Image (cartoon, rainbow, N blue to C red; front, side, top):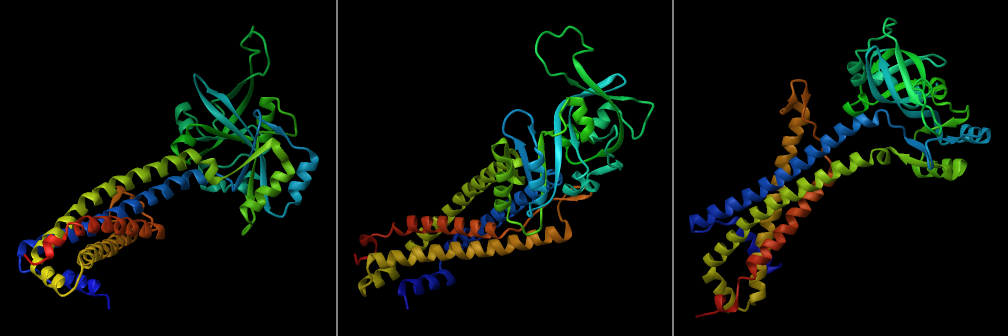
Length: 401
């Protein structure tokens, strides 16, 4: 059996005759456990917030979206449509027309983005989950579904024929504008529903039939801004992207859900990294207690170390004892902390201990990778702290005076 490991375990379990050393050792162990628990709880909290935030944007995000690589729109040929319809990877796809517009009702107006969708959009996105009031738009009509924020800012009701809604967009062209009447295309619309997704989308988007959007923008029948795809269950995303790209070529750029929300993902990941680094700094401070505890133990065991040296142990062997003791202390503290944190997170998920609002519990998510991140961090810091403390042992300290 490894003698250094055996002695390190004995030192870890046994109590010193000096109560101050016992107290410092217990404080160091508790500090490591609480540091590990805090780091895991914070990482689980951020994972929960990330999932909670993304669920509101991903509810209207397709599996794949084909956006134009140049300009604002591209043309779909009959051959493109035939090949897309025959593609086995795709369950449904919807043609989309998008543009910034001005929406006016009585004396109020606001900027918005009109999103013209065809009859297959309801198959790509579950529109029932976003509708707060009213019903979804019908094709070949002047109906629109507006976001909650736009509805509030314009004081729009549902099927209110007494309040006409006008949608304006600047006409394309060159030269000087001589008349405001000739500067804009416009259509009349009626609000038949209000959707709620998140604050950003609620304040920006208006859904409309695709023909209404095309007429407003003077688009040709085969001209679209983008295509949104719903893939069949179990289809490999990369394979589907390659097949769609082979049909549509370089005129489009394909994005998945993560790429559609790349700014949000980057922000959340950056915040997660910042919090991890801050709590790692707290752990580093906690490991100073481990260093102090080991140094005090070395001084307390000076006579025993002298005996070990005299019977043939080298300085390297003696250093290894306290290196292993500090490492074991860190591992034990980390495991205790992870168990404690897991219990707290489990209780939060099960019993909603902490609430953000009276009806919304603080979201947490238990992820396997967070266990490994915390354990790895604790182990590395424990090894470094143990090494710093153990190298304090010198030959002059342990040899007979």
